[in-house]
Length: 121
Image (cartoon, rainbow, N blue to C red; front, side, top):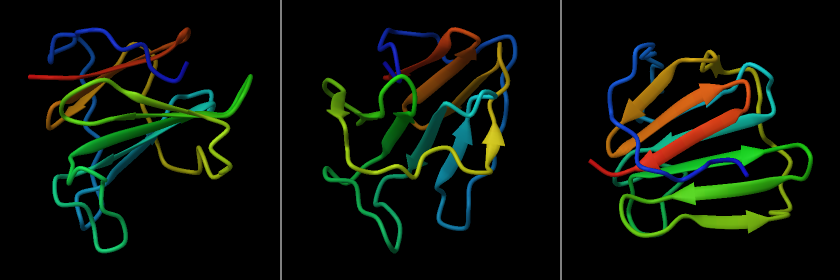
């Protein structure tokens, strides 16, 4: 799975800041390049609007099978098996193993075993 959805504290020992683009969207990958995430702020961007208005965290895993998991600010995650897109994990910031990232209601922690993300304050 792209994300193991469990409650995690907002602060981690290795907190990493990843800057957003001009519209507040943040992209990052795990160091292996197998998992990539895009954070979209509340209200979306000029080219993408989250279904519920956002904010939203969408993470895709390439191997062993391509899947996407979408976290909204409330409720369960949505898992899309075989989303038909293969655009994951380009040349963007890397969330180093052992480090965490947080923005809005979302927090993620990167490890050699994968990426764990959660929504909630």
